Image (cartoon, rainbow, N blue to C red; front, top):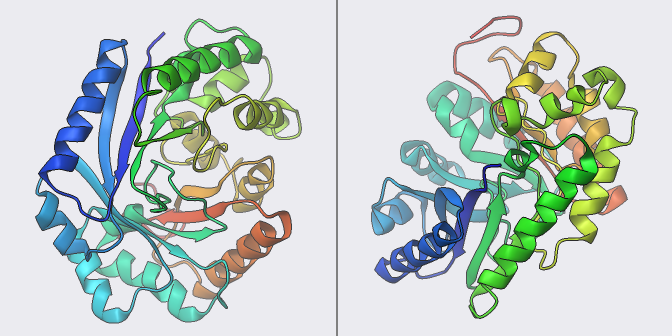
Length: 321
């Protein structure tokens, strides 16, 4: 099976050459244990989008300014021009208003790729290595796996759980003496298809995606990743990225993954609405309603939820892209 680290993220208020060198050392440590490191990231909360990009100045490093309570209009253009510097808009304690929805629709019109780089966040924990939910809490680094790739050769959830636990323990032991190690975000982050897809594995257990939503596969998975992680940090939940898990995108295309089903599965200790398609002609009031509902569910159950809507910038409701 492929041992893949989706990301190592370093959280620092003073990014620079030392941070880059540290990420390189951590990557080498993981590679020495047979892990493929897909991405290296930095989350730094005290710089603007363009300023952070110019400071780091490495195309190979994914960047985030972390969590913000608001994004004033004068900063919005800075975000659009930076294009690939992520952040999350924390609305946990705010009244959700049209101006919050305006950010999404302005991005769709002016910088569609920027829709991938931000999410609306509620009860967001610190130190998750995944962007855009990454949020600075203290100096140090955390690790997130592409845990679905450990599914290769597994015929049951229990075999997969054992493979995940082995990987967590191996990484925790590897970094045990590193004072800046914040922990492992055991979130399940699917990607593409075959062993990278959670949905392909679930349906391979002899069920349909529709039926699986009222079975206990997702509940058992989230219970395990929350209870057995030896050094948890960040989100530690179930990600259902509609456009990143390709068989899930196919279910969406069939009408089997509407927003309501997405939210229902998010309450199985999932993490919300992620890379969910939105048409440029979507009703703004509808988006406002959905954000208010997500906030209410997040606060009611005291669990992290987020929403990341993604647009190609041209496609309308019903269009294929």
